Image 1 (cartoon, rainbow, N blue to C red):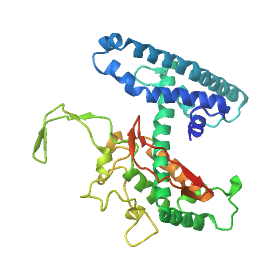
Image 2: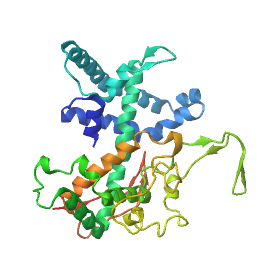
Image 3: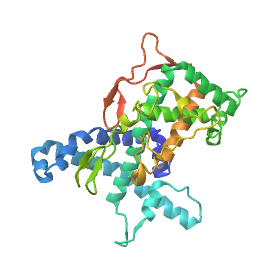
Image 4: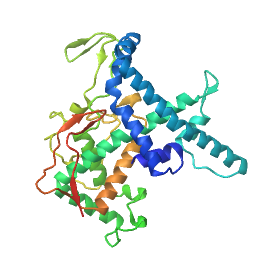
Length: 330
């Protein structure tokens, strides 16, 4: 999944060691977030002195980040210029849009430091949460073999039982996904039951309001418990149960009728809601559907003998499995 993100970001297929280098650097930044956030959160100037060793670590990580990403940006800039000179077409990558972007008020393009930061955000924000959601979904499918079997039958019906599941040509393709409504129901149930983010970014009350008898003063910090919303027993029947059928149109297995953006009502919010919803939620849903479909189509997932799937949680940058999924494939 990270390889796909790198390709989307820089537009070139990089060698595996280079991708691994980028991935390790991003992981160090993401996992170190909790260690470094205190430096700037409270009294930034004093924090740099009190946490000076952590500050040095952060500066070194940022230097490493620039040393890795800037050459990729410059290589893409040169390739873009050469393609333009020769009249060749270039598949547009994320970094291409950043290079072309002009800030209207300042009448300038983004500088290299800003592009590095945005590329890092693109790689981390999309990969960590999506891969975490994917592992939770697969864990629930291993723990519920009847659901896994039903999903396989739905995929087979859309793709074709007679296909040999060996060649790339016979993988589940993007156009097949719309024919598998149960797949989307499985993804939605996974995001409801185990959202990778249990909190959204804090907001403040723009004015004093009263909610359910409680007065919330103006400028109060507001935290939304996104993980708890999806487990509310007043909204969801048997909320701890993994049951994708709850998202299918009542009395039908042929469609899913659910607004994940929260524009109609908010029953769960794995991507946030409103104007500040995750801008790439549609891409995340596409990736989850594509990867889950192909993992189920090509392999049968079974629990390791004597090792039950543990759905305990652990808080890192995202809410991950305390004990990562182990499965026997065939």
